[in-house]
Image (tube, rainbow, N blue to C red):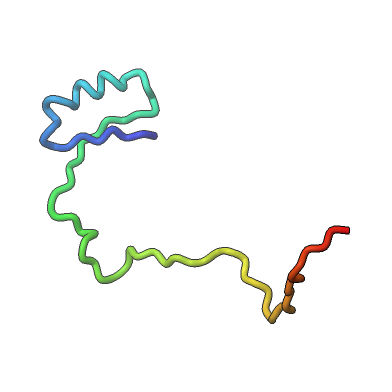
Length: 76
């Protein structure tokens, strides 16, 4: 479902036109945003914070032997 959200101040000029425009598309619903007040997400001290984790495979434990390459290349 796709929602076409219209701001309250734009209801009169847009709502009827958008409903008519999307009339033949059953996947779109035209709605009016009726939320009031300040955005409560800002300034929150708890919750809403994602913990980012490194999901890559961990490196094998231990040390690896030195793999020094020869100084000169020899092609025989």
